[in-house]
Length: 227
Image (cartoon, rainbow, N blue to C red; front, top):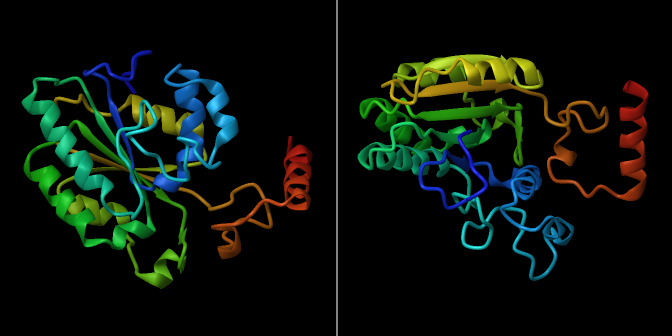
């Protein structure tokens, strides 16, 4: 992403966490950029803390979208991509991180059609295809596969990648067409929910789970044995 140490820099890229419940992974990155004091991290989800389960753009510098109910992020990203073009900010790219189960929201596909119609090559959607959501396995709740073919039918360029392969992801990002192109890009990142922790992998129990001390110890043991 094109960033600076100033979250108010108008020409920077924007990141839309449509699956905003993963904000805990973004907050440390923003702190590293100096967007807010690192000691905020210790207050995560505590009463009065600006750092909640979902990000709040009114309280956290560097957050571009206040999420909650899923399914809205691609529409917001499409609007931001259009706005960047209208303002002459042709180098800025809008990134939208989506979950696979939120693709059963109709608004997603309205945005997909709009983005290709307006030729928003500065818009990149990344689908975390981790096979699960709060209600259970994605394909059992409401089928969204084949994700790539569905986006392609709406006029998007598609890239399929192993979402656990960091080097492959970096190559994919580096190979994106210029932001001034006219074809939006969808990266389908195939992942496994809870990857690397046996008792968490593809477990509905651990879609939302409290990591009690015994659970944390078991997870650490498994990670340490692997490395």
